[in-house]
Structure formats: C-alpha cells, structure tokens
Image (cartoon, rainbow, N blue to C red; front, side, top):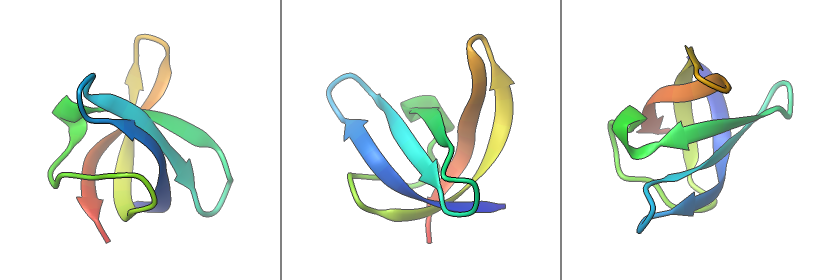
Length: 63
C-alpha cells in the first residue's frame, strides 16, 4: 500500500488527485476507487491500477 495526501477532490463530480508521499507523483482517483469517503488534505493509503489514461489510485482508505 502506498501512502499519500488528497490534493484535490470534487465530491459533486466524484474525482480528484492524490499526491504520493514517497515519489511526489500525483494520481487520479475516482469515487469508484474509494473505500472511505475522502476530502482535501486527508491522509490516505491506496494502491495503483492501470487506467485508460495512466495509473489511477484505487482501494483508497483513510490512514
């Protein structure tokens, strides 16, 4: 599991971005990849899965 922080999340549109603590890479996250509800600045753990436009954060949980 990777650890990161929610940089942006739009609840009405159901997507956002998570910044990886180790690499500082940003990953797209969609509401379908969430286990817990998240909001901006939450610390989270996540896994990566190949999506249509690159790697997406999935199985996202509050840390």
